[in-house]
Length: 390
Ligand SMILES: [Zn+2]
Image 1 (cartoon, protein in one colour):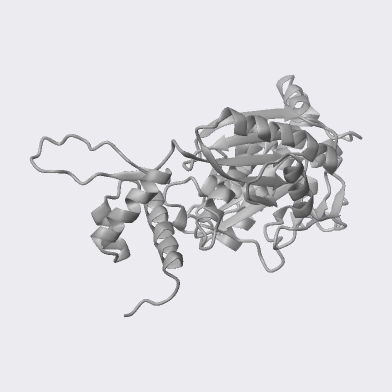
Image 2 (cartoon, rainbow, N blue to C red):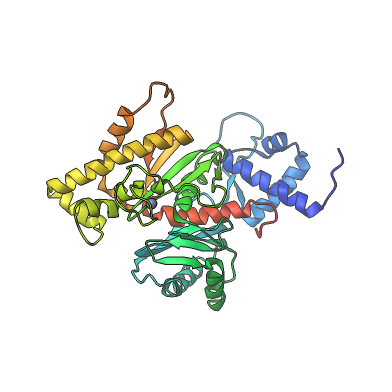
């Protein structure tokens, strides 16, 4: 078959295919890549060398086997030249981190920040970004991902609603562009929803991300979720798939910020727990932990109730989406067994007669870095799209 079209575009597609292959199967040799892509060995050698020179790939040390003859050199993602910058524009803190292509965190600056004005937040972030970039001159940073705690439009240019920050209808893309330009930071950037970022953090850097399907739950002041199906973020028709926090779990239940009643978020979140405990202010995780440690019965009961509701939500997710894993993330997870224990027992007890395969339920490995790390992962994903800036 004759291949026509733009040669440099084809070359980029081949380069991307090779990076994806090595990401999925660390240790592949040049010959393996030729076999799997159908490209000639000489083309593969040429492109692999280019990718090594640029820092996308590296050669791993060949294990001595004692056998005679040259062993094929295993390839892996490069971790010494290229980096990803991820930002969590959190509700009460800011987090900036630099990660390798494998998700190893090289640098992090997290600090409390309570001023919810968008201008103040972005202004505070710019010097943090500059420090991060200055401290790692040896790395070429490919771009910046911004994790935003709110609902974004499908093209991620508009912020539709961020209830916990009081933001509605902001041109978030233009605002960030303006601040980056004023700070003279000239890098491609990608705003995204916080829970979607958490889901990417757990999937992009996992073994064989192309086959991974998971649901990430972000539980804190509110309750968000991100869905990854077969390695791709599922955003839905209008961009807000995964709003599992606003699925109704209790008819005529507590009033939710979204206008409905009895949403999962009103039952499984810091705000839900604070309401159960009849507190006017939203309780911090530290305060909830303190009350649990001192054996406060009311708090124990409230957390137990939230945990049982979480178990029902997990069962609903397992049945409706059938992911390989459900990952529990966000600060609420720090309540530990008091929350997760009743969730797991309710999940198991509500197993249906025909549920043959168990969904794995686990705690997020990225912890409070999940959003920023996922925003960094988004940059990597963007670079692996044909026509990207990478
Ligand atoms: Zn709601």
